[in-house]
Length: 175
Ligand code: S3P
Image (cartoon, rainbow, N blue to C red; front, side):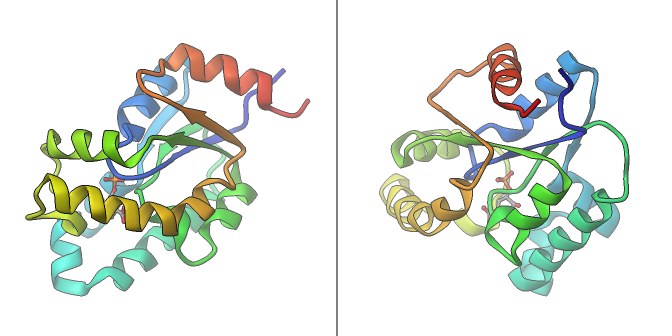
């Protein structure tokens, strides 16, 4: 039984995609890629700066371009996508042409708490208090879940370990 060459972790901001992707990659001996970090490396500026200077559509184009590039790389990779990546430009289709997707599913209350405690600068949620943040997440999650729910594997709940993800992956990949 073989794991897919590319495994994508998707989900809302604050769902722990990068942390888990890194651990998962380590365990299965894949390389790790964080789409936001790769964009920052290529553009030589932060995601926040790209949003501010060029606007969101420009950033969404960068995401899709980079996904398209991944198509041509044979390397085994676990890839943490940005929270919005699956929701634009038919990216979910593209993701499934390239590999296998895992949605880390959390409710808005948990996401709000996690995001309030996070140090990462996220342009879509700057300057929001807990109440505003929760309302914003409710609104955006409702819009985005239709894309996230197309994932090959949906994992609900907190404190999921890389080991559990691997077990679920093996149970869910087609032979
Ligand atoms: C975004 C999520 C961010 C980053 C950008 C936009 C979104 O990634 O791509 O700020 O639209 O949800 P994380 O999910 O890693 O925070």
